[in-house]
Length: 427
Image 1 (cartoon, rainbow, N blue to C red):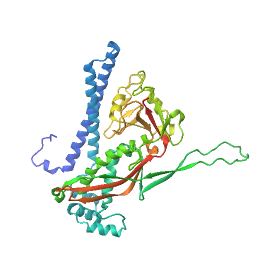
Image 2 (tube, rainbow, N blue to C red; image 1 turned 30 degrees about the horizontal axis):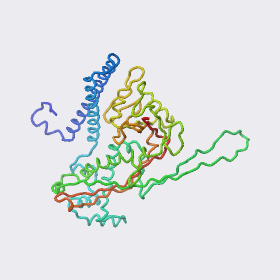
Image 3 (tube, rainbow, N blue to C red; image 1 turned 180 degrees about the horizontal axis):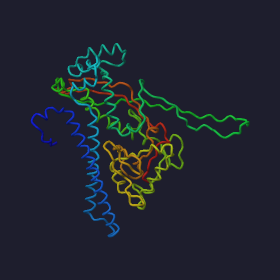
Image 4 (cartoon, rainbow, N blue to C red; image 1 turned 90 degrees about the horizontal axis):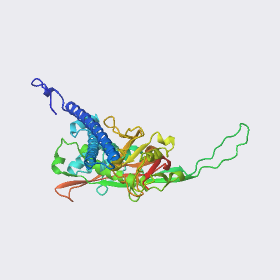
């Protein structure tokens, strides 16, 4: 960043965070501009490619390569914009700033946890958890992190894990969450004012259970880092575990089989949407194996959108990976307008047919009979269950001279309303 010319001594009067915020805002604005520029180049190149196909019965190889490079640049620009938005929301690593956020400084639990992480002294944590009658704590099970760290980790997971950001999240204190689901709708009808009211059939209820499974990460640190009193251990730990947790969650919420992990929505039973029944997710077929139809390929996207009831459709979101998104970027409507549009602001989502697009790398690529694209109201359709408590076990012996921190959290998930999600099947 190039600072403007100022009189001697002027720069010293400006605070570091103010300069960082200004620089961050400028970099985010530049990244957003780069994304818009890349998409304009993508549209122009794809239009030229389509003209070549119509005029010479085949696209030029050079044009195809150029389009592939611009498409990759689009993905890179979007990733950069998302990362900048996330970085600006992160707290600083310095301990004084962290203490200022807490207002009254480090709490007793936080101070005891800080001493445990830096020096391995666990007496303070053991005393606190004994007073709180906490079960499963101690050297074998680890110690609970302060609530501020747990909240920070969950906040970051919501920003990084696409399905968690869309789904309903429940926090529980036990090992599983149970709720009742109506298998059949209650019977109702019209009746005159003085006519008899015949008894109607009661709805049939089924119990749905969402067990909390154990997810772990094992970040490592040098003793030099731990001895540095300026480093905020809370932020460091959150930094280290966020990516590992987000990647594992992202895969499990999409395709997990429910064995020692959450059950993903792609693992649910499916049925053709025209024959949908409760307890199964409906799908719409493309009519072509491993691809979109050659003529009017976007029609199947409209079929998918309108296969969802209006009550769910108004909060609908597309979920796909970047390779499927790359294919759909080329689609146009009858007026020649591109159906995919880049985000209008930093932190925003790209849109398809006016609905937001969530990029989930755990979604499968296009293949024969694959379920590579989902659309629905995931807030009503999918449930994430977090068990209270994030545990850390300090291990200074297994990888000397590094200190390992075996960090675990309990999380579960599954479909809670099968009618709220629809899938596109490439068959």
